[in-house]
Image (cartoon, rainbow, N blue to C red; front, top):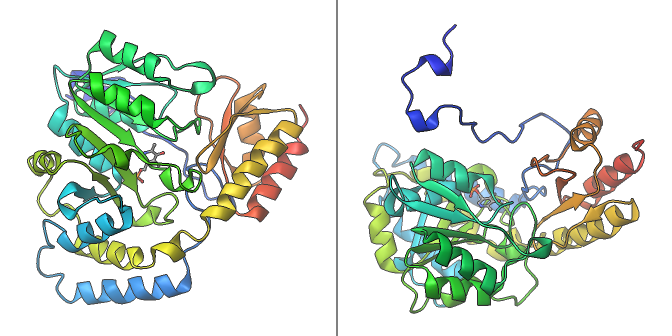
Length: 358
Ligand SMILES: *Cc1c(COP(=O)(O)O)cnc(C)c1O
């Protein structure tokens, strides 16, 4: 049997682990922060019709510039964002990979603030970019002073700011993002995958884009927008950043079917986001009820809750799995992360967890 070690793989990939959130067939999957509500039937019907229409010309390559989709994404984002400032790919993971291909690479350094989204360091590694880290403040917060000190000390080519942060749920203030942009000589990527779950009216880093050509805000249709399976992530930035990404993207990377599906879904944006309030309520309920069960949940601005006070995370994960409930062990000692699902899913998770012998 050939093993990976027998192959002439790149030296810097030896011993690395792939992204590996377990994908198990369970009744209640609260492990990868999807919107667990199915999309409305009227959207299913419209997306189906749009994909069917796109199939009639699928013998041809798709629009390489996905102009219509970018137009719709710009409208969805608002904040004065123009089509020329928008770029998209198969999930925001691919958007981030293209950013690191263009602005990172061998001899360059990317700064992150763990615990944070595991794909940031994995994409750093796969693009040959050095991953360097700095500490957060108490309760996983990131103050302007702490972030600026890290940027000045480590002088990165790229900085990742994830807000609300996965897996902690902690938002980062615009003051910190502004301060980092002011001192960083490189690209500042604000990963706003969970932006729609922030309190109503909370400003996004999109509002900081004017006059900051090295600031990039990445978003996704995978979380609040309930479109994870379609694979559509996007960013807003200066049009010059988009020009840089054209140098590294593969031609026609967004299929005609993906483009058609995403455009159709975006035309129902308010309906697609109708479950966000209900999910926020379940998130807040998780924080209250996990504390009542004796755990130590962290405040969250996203659609998941990180909770501490878990004596044996692996055993708790396993116990829940035996009851057909999948959550996430993110490898943080004493902690587990759970996605806010439907009221019924949340109830069952809390009841099963409450019955566990500990
Ligand atoms: C889930 C997630 C993403 C989204 O990935 P997609 O490739 O768009 O599905 C990006 N960033 C963070 C922090 C996430 O948690």
